[in-house]
Amino acid sequence: MAETATRSLPLSGIHGGSATVRLEPAAPATRIALRVAMEDVGTLSGALGVDLPVRPKTSAFANGRTALWLGPDEWLVIDEGESGLMTAAANSGATHSAADVSHRNTAILVSGPGAADAINAGCSQDLSLEAFPVGACSRTLFGKAEIVLLRTAEDAFRVEVWRSFSDYAFGLLAEGARDAAL
Amino acid sequence: MLLIHCPYCEEDRSELEFRWAGEAHIARPENIAAISDEEFAEFFFLRNNEKGLTYERWRHIHGCGRFFNAARDTVSDRFLLTYKAGLPKQPVPVAEKFAAIAEEKSVETWEQTEGDAR
Ligand SMILES: [Zn+2]
Image (cartoon, rainbow over all chains, first blue to last red):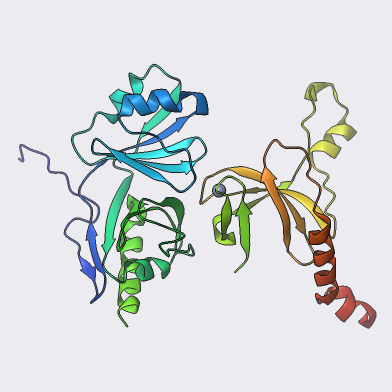
């Protein structure tokens, strides 16, 4: 009988891409879906150690944590290290709603000169650097799956997707990557 | 692709990200238990379903998740205006309205093509 449980990511071991796009699963991360009223944004920002952005389509990064604006009172906060996100939010003392969605989401890292084209194979948003600069983020659709897209560099994106859609998203990205290299 | 301006995201997005959510500016009765069956039917079931300029609720469900209001021409499918939920009914700018009417005239409607054939 096994004595330790091993965590296996939904896309564990998968890899793909093309001559211009690299696709790989992101490392495990802790995530919370956060809802906060405007007057408490400052308090929660202080508690989490990252300023919750209040402008549409923007994100902020500090102390190993990324806060992504999803809506006027809604954020996705991602911590790639050892996290205390839920505890930090709970200790803020301000009214909020935080749901641990670490295992609901998984992420695919898309990079390379064809990265934007590969994503545009299933996403209608303008991913030019003018419309979607580094740090821009948005909840949107990729094919038939809802994703949260974050631009981490000029030629790199993080695609957050619900785990049950991850095979579909990876498959469609792989096709987009092939097309982007043509 | 039809683009819809989300007043919360402050930009045009593909219609794929949105979902229709019925007629706008229908006030829920303050004391719903006190109204008559006829009044309830009027509030709950009956919609105007107007041809032309209508005010509708839309939701940016695959974006910011917000409900908002839109003035839309149901003949041309043109969005004339969108604005945040909670605001009173907004007038449609005149220029937009005339452009919509001009477009309407060039849209092939059932009455134009089939109306006399019955
Ligand atoms: Zn929106």
